[in-house]
View 1 (cartoon, rainbow, N blue to C red):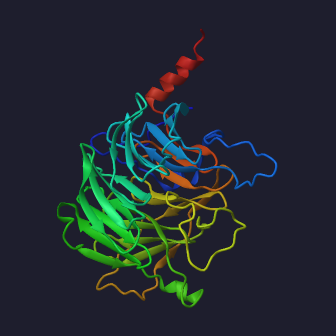
View 2 (tube, one colour; view 1 turned 90 degrees about the vertical axis):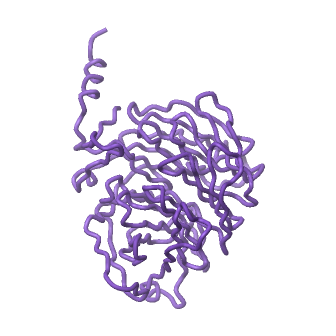
View 3 (cartoon, rainbow, N blue to C red; view 1 turned 180 degrees about the horizontal axis):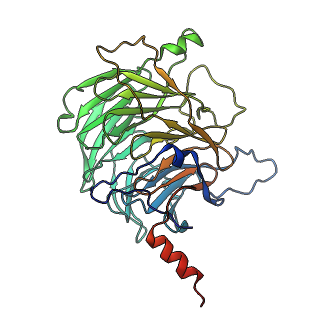
Length: 399
């Protein structure tokens, strides 16, 4: 299986994919890795909590490699062009979560799940740790590389955000918050956002003046929740991501809705519906009164051209929302205004089980989804490049 680039603009330093409704409607799994996670043998009398899952996925800057982290304390590297598994590495001592490529395809950073709460800088080439970043007093629940340099940012259960640089072991900035934060950089690396649950606030900071007050404070309130129960069930935010054009902020949530905000004024623009939230581990589990993160956090993301949003669901569906015609309200923010409700353009059947991680490749016309298995998706309409054609002819040539 080969992955073909789809309308890549080679004249840009950050080429964007040109996608349309037809491409998004006709995507299908082209390769499924059923052994993406190791599951222990079930012994009599031992409780079973269901299959282990992939907890995080990440593409490198070039889009030709994919890294996964899983509950079996392994991280695995895949080639996106050939569709092959390249290597499996283990982190049994520290555990692994939130894998993130640095701007070198041979190095990553990741959070720990045991031993301590440090962030580890790891070389994939020779399988050794290059550095440790210590300071958090609680598990790291959000981790992002700067899109423009060697800086990165982490949010922890200790209610702090720390700003780091790969070249120094000590953090260069610290924000103390009233609740555990979720973080994201914008595409320029000049602005970052911090979501604070329990307060329904999203704070936007200037990267160069992070020690000052946020320049914008957004209150996330959904008036339609009053129609379901009163008082309304709180919104639990699990991820933030800016659109590539910088106009919008996608707020991923553990419940049955995600939200799109105006990144400049803070208006609530749209509510994405049609999926089953991942705050429960199984479809049969009952909802609690207080919302929880559950196993959500990486199940929703933008396509690189900011025209679509792809997301997972507890029932295993992979959904596509068309957000090409978003309209930003004018005037002051009205928290009582009902947001536009957007339902999926299409719901794809993918691999069995929870669609826990869903991301679109930043450079190529392919998508990856993961849960108990890992799937690579291609469009039926994707044109084959000359490189792919030559490879296919080479394979068919007689020996």
